[in-house]
Amino acid sequence: MTNNVLNSFGRAGLYLTVFLTGASVMVIELLGTRMIAPFYGASLYVWSSLISVTMIALSLGYYIGGRWADCAKRSGLSLIIALAAIFTLLIPCVTRVILLATDPLGLRAGAFVSSLVLFSPSLTMLGMIGPFAIKLSTSQLAGVGSSAGSIYAVSTVGSVIGTIVLGFFLFPLVGSREILVGLSILLLILAIVVAIYEQKFLEISKAILTSVLMTIIGLSMLPKVIGEAHAYSGGKNFQILSEQESLYGWVRVIEEPARDLRFLTSDASMIGASSISDDKSRLGYQKIVSLIPALTPKMSKALIIGLGAGHMAKTLQDRYGIVTDTLEIDPAVASAATNYFGFKPTGQAIVGDARREISRLKGPYDLIIHDCFTGGTEPAHLITVETLKQLRGMLAPNGILALNFVAFANDKSTALSSVSRTIEQAFPNQSVFIAEPGEDYNDFIFLASAEAIDLNSKSLSPEEMSWLQTRLYSVNKTQGIILTDNFNPLEHMQVEKSERYRRELISWFGTDLFVR
Image (cartoon, rainbow, N blue to C red; front, side, top):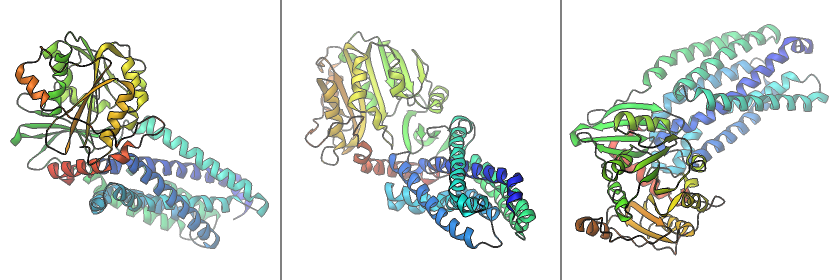
């Protein structure tokens, strides 16, 4: 190798290589959550696992790459890039096996170990590229600092561009499996191009042969990777009517004809259930929520945060004539509710993040149904003092906030107590109902308002009044803390609940639905 050769066109190619591999690191890291979220959820633990594994793998890559760069004679960048491509292509092939193997470890350890096994090989290889590039770009000791700074700057810019391209453009249009396959092919092509340069100008013998061999291995794997995509159709008991991967989850509509049930799921969360025959909701807590307008007659306008299958909006319209605005973050959920559960907007149907959109909405609302906490993960930012005060400001003077929250009873977790204490900071009055009395793991419905709620409203029939009274629940607030934007350990409090939720769904549908 001569410095003149590198300066003429090799340096530009080297920077392009570092740019593309830097982008690849972020693509793999971000797609990692989509590969394991259907099984472990998209919780803070999953994100923490992916970020930790990425840092571990890059650290190993920097160290091993530096040692290899110093002693390498006949192997160079092309081999490392080709290996990164092969390991990336392996990810969708072994995801199912790894997730099932790590399931006994639980949510936190399982998410971390599966991330480590699935993503560290390819990320370690990509981390090795930096030290190699620094050595190739440095002609003398005095230029090491400048070369290292340039290489890592270009790699970081590549990571930024890769993140933007994936999140803003690719991911809304292409599935994660297909993106991984495309990334692997891109890296294989890059490996061959680099190998041609290495063999011709750097005199690394058999560089092209090695990269071509790796490419053949990669191409031979493609039929298996592509063939396994979306292979699960539901089996004998269940039928998958629809599935769509969105930015927020893998959304499916599933039917169990033998029990007259249709489900709406997002990753490992059940967000809607109805009878196939009459399309009525089969979620027990919604029966309690459907009685709320009778407690404060003359309600005319409502807001639902967390659309689910859209049954509550239909009930409010059909039973009380209430016009309802709906707010749902996931367009795939909104589409499924419309196409498979008969949801028809009676007010605004907004798709967007709740914290951002509620600051734009104009009340007053007579009723706000906050229904974002029934799944396997917790959008903790939607249950803070700050959020609840925003919602109170959108209510009419006698308006009611109804918040549904899945948790264990008081003696099992501080989550329920914390939610009650947090609501107390924004509303002077609160009543709590339990969906299934006597069950420890349950739906708890909080009614909060500025004025006292009359649970003996004449608009309720005697049977409804008695049924509702038997579900009144007293929350022990001594165990909880107040949840704020600054401090909100709700996900940590709900680990046992997330584990229970995931086990129940797996026992219901089987593991095949949640591993890809």
